[in-house]
Every structure is written in C-alpha cells, then in structure tokens.
Image (cartoon, rainbow, N blue to C red):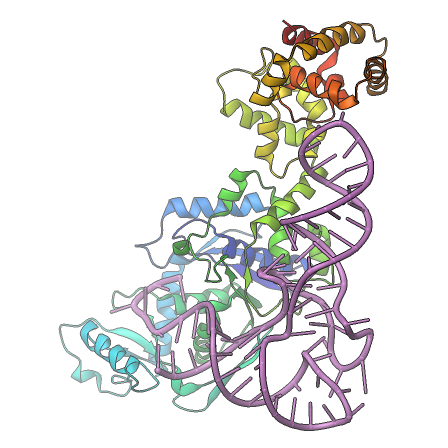
Length: 467
RNA sequence: GUCCCCAUCGUCUAGAGGCCUAGGACACCACCCUUUCAAGGUGGCGACACGGGUUCGAAUCCCGUUGGGGACGCCA
C-alpha cells in the first residue's frame, strides 16, 4: 500500500509556524515511505478564503522546500461530489434534514452549557416526519451519530482514545444553501484522494470521532490518524494567527534559512535520541510517527537562531553573497561596484562566522560592500582621533606598502614586527588598523580583512584615515 | 459547564521498572583561546508537579489531586 498524506490548509491567512510543521511532518512521512504528499486547499468557506492567502501559503511552502505530488486540490471544486455523497446518505436514511432556526440552535447551545444534556443538538429532527417541516426554512443535512456505545480512535501519536457516543452530536454535513461543511468535505476528499494517513494538529482530535462515523456511514475505510500536539507561544497558549503567531515569511525576512526552519520544526515534538542537527536527508530516513511527543512544545527563538548560525556556516557562500547583495541593494541607492561584489564573495565566510541571520551578514558587510569613504562608528572615530594612532597608521601604511606577498601570514609578520619594535601589544596596533580599514571596532580578523580588500584598497583606506 | 489530551532543567528533549547520585541541546555564568567581535574548548547552574498505590525496586505502571492545553459553529 502506498502511503498518501496530505496537508490541507484553509486559506484564511498566511502559513504560520504550526501549519508549517504539520506540512513538514506530512511531507517527511510521505517521503520516508516513498509515498505521496498532496496539497489541498480547504476553501469550502468562500467568504473567508482569499486568493491572497492561497498565494502566501504556497509561497511559504515552497520556501520551506516542501514539494507536493500531483496537482493542488481545491476543495471548493468538489462541492458537487460532496453534495452527491450527502444525497446518498440521505437516501439511505443515514442522514436527515433538520429545519431548526438559528434561534432554536442558540437556545440548545445555552442549555447544554448550563449543565444540560451531553449533546448540544437534541436530535429533534432526527426522526421527525418531514411533512412537519416549516415552509420558510431551508433545511441543513445532519448525519446520524450512534446514540449509545463508545468509539475508540487508535491514533498513531495519541494512542487509543475513547469517547462515549452520547457526546457526539448529529453534525451538519450540508448547509442550507447546499454547500458542504468542512466535516463532510475532508472525509470525502481524503477518501477520494486515497489518503492513508491523516496527520494534523491535535485540535482536530475531537473531529476525528465525528469523521470516523462519517467514514463508516459511507462504507469507506477509515484512514490512520496521527494528531500531533500544537506549538505554543512563549506564554504557553496555542499559537494561532490571532495570538500573534507569525508566518514563515516573517522568518524568511529575518534571514532564517529554510533548512534551519525544517530542522527546528522537526525537533519541536520529535526526537531521535540526542541528535540535534538533522539534515533533511537524514530526517527523511529517520522520520516516524512513534517518536512524536504528545505534549505541546513552545516556540523558542534563541534555538532557531542558534540553529540558523549553524546552517549559515554550511550554506553555499556564493548563494549567501547573492542574497546579501540583494539585501544591500535594497537598503541603499548606491549601486555596488564589481570590486565590492568580489570582496564580498571573498570575505563572506569570515562574516558568516559571527552572525546568526542573513540580515546580520548584510549589516556587517558594509566594510566590503561600499567603496571609500567609509562611515565610521563612534569608537572607530575616537580611536582615529588619537595622534598616536595617526602615527601608527601612517607608518604602517608605508610598511605594508612594501610587503612583497599580500597574504595573511606576510601581513601578520609585518604588523607584529612593527608592534614589537615599538613595544606595543598587537591589539594596540590591530585596533587602529581595524578602525581605519572597516570604520568599526568590530570586524573579522584584521589580516583577513586586508587580504579581502586587496593591497590597493587597503592602502587607500589607510591613506584616507591618516589625513 | 461538558468532553478530550498533556505533565522530566527557564526552553526543546533523552528516558519505554533496575544502565539514572536522570543524559544531550539552547539560553545563562565562569574560565581558556585571542588583534576586536564571534566561533571554538573546558567547567558550572539547573528538572522527574504533588499525594497515594503496585513492586525487592518507579521518572518509567495504576488511581487521585493540582496545573496547563485543546474541542464543544450552517469556521476550518
């Protein structure tokens, strides 16, 4: 049997962290079993669904690198099929029309909450003769749930979960306007697309009991369920859109790498012994549902950043440079010279060493990206204002001008000799150089900087700083 | 209110009765390295929610309490 999983977002907003993880788990599970991972847009609620949201979700998914198999399914396009199934159920007496008014429903809800019956809907139309139907109300179609007994869902993550059937309402499968509700649509679509495993947030666990009986009523095989715990915010509450959860695009904008996000999301609620750094290849190989935890996890930015720092160091420098240049270009009206681009390509690995996001690389790349005149920060300016510093810089400029081979070890030797000769610590010489060459008191190793800048640019910058 | 789920360091987690005076990672602190900042290295701080059982033995099994979360729509 081929494994078929699906990710089924409702297009009412961006792809948030929780949705992204659900998608990832479905994707990993399918890839692990060499099965299919299908993407389905749950747009049965036309009022709330928007094209903009659909686009954003697709963008998020493709940024994450979760490619789906086959065409995207739009649930709204199956409305006819859904209605057909409802009609069939009606014909078989497994469903019935309910003519309750909104007021009646509200009343029932209130009595139930006030400690009344276990069911909200009191089944008042379940066995009533349709001839009693009020003429002015368009009916909905409800499915008959078992009246007694209990139902057990063997969930792949939650284990066996049992619920008595007297808490299961006859829920609506077709609205009064003839459109299907979510509950009907998922079951029909999941069946039609051959979903073998339904992996989703555990906020759907309760729905599984209802859907279970809908499958049965249709005479269909029930797929395996796996309800994964939700991701919570730092405050421990559900991370939903309305609780300030951010879309994956937000993290992309922050300069987080997709591979970071995949690794991070994977480790939230899933583990493989003590392993922390898990490549996507490895994840596909290792992923299973047994190791998914049952308690909700909190989102931790520090951890994400730490992981990102790791993946940044593994990333392709050319690729990173391109992204940094794009960011830099967006932040200024100055265009980047070819020299600047070359310098960035050479120097980026030194930059990557000290940051956690792509944006931070861009922030620190100024020393390579922009041609003189440099902008100096306060500390650099103070340092350069010192007459001793001025003296060292001009003497050093001369010495460096005479260095035969412009590489780190030669430069290192030259500067060290100068420091020793003047009975200075290396830092006393290196810091002024740093200020003059980078405009800052913080930078990659100063000899590395000189090599990346090249002889001409280095000398030019020293010249400029000493006047 | 009803139903369901969960409970190990601040956070993510390892742990499936003896390997646990509970391991790893992030964060934090200290030290080392050092031309700055990082990175790296070494060490430190720090948890089995509580109460009952079961057992020779419980973080692991059972019950209860407490705490947290989720669901109760003609939303998905």
